[in-house]
Length: 344
Ligand code: KG4
Ligand code: ZN
Image (cartoon, rainbow, N blue to C red; front, side, top):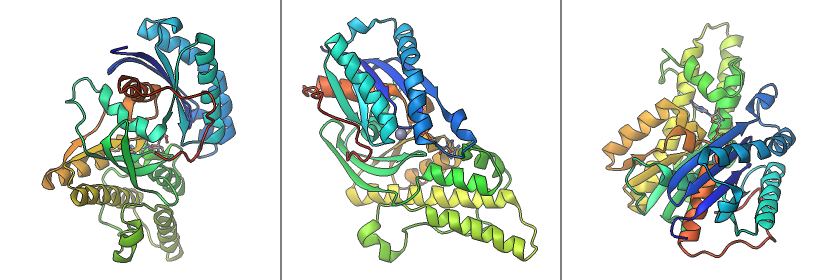
């Protein structure tokens, strides 16, 4: 089909995402989140997420079809995230996708979640088409990855990723230290209002000269979280008053600084004048500001898809599969499973 009609299923974390695209056109993007169920645990609980997917899938598929104005039999293919992500959560989506594909006798495409985040950019109707090569920085509660995209369907290279916590996870953990609820990102943003981002110099992980050989494009945020905890304990022990706004702003600055520095370093090293941002942490206004400002100075153009396409969703999965279909890629056989550490 010239512009294939694809239904994409995304269940790698806590969002049950169903998206429908026709070629590069977004028809619907339905999301059911189990975020509220995880809130009291301060983070995503894998089995709770998997059960929630199982309960939400049917209604999400029906809503997406209704919104797109198409029926299951109109589909040209079904697409699903097979990894990386939470194993049990992925399995629910993979099982559902296989059942649909077999029941409808339609081709099935298993796709990589991270590459899906990049494909989200294609659905941005107002933007110029994605040009290659592009460096992509993907930051969410589950991943922090830097990729070099030479071609979306054939050549995506992982340059680096977090060696411990994801950036969003760091926001969630530091929010908890400050006594703020989950998810922490928006809470830290609110707490940082009026704070001085240079009040406390928190560490930038894996940024020493000695880290450059092995971890130039990798990230580490667990040390940062520990540094914030230790700093707060010290102030309390010494009986010092301190401003939570300064802590929030300084913490956020450390995360933003290291993310933007490494992404632009990759652009410079690989001679790539384009940077694509994706993942839920892109909701952070300070991150977008600093990225745009420093990129402009470096002669790099920043692309940011609309937020509903940046957070986990099924439309990006469908969009990637549409590109695969249009490039002549054969569908997956039914023998694939869920792979929590699927490489790009
Ligand atoms: O992409 P997403 O919705 O789900 C996955 O984690 O896959 O991202 C959620 C993460 C959470 O860790 C949340 O704290 C973080 O994104 N987040 C933010 C902001 N809004 C959400 N982090 C920093 N600043 C924000 N404004
Ligand atoms: Zn994601």
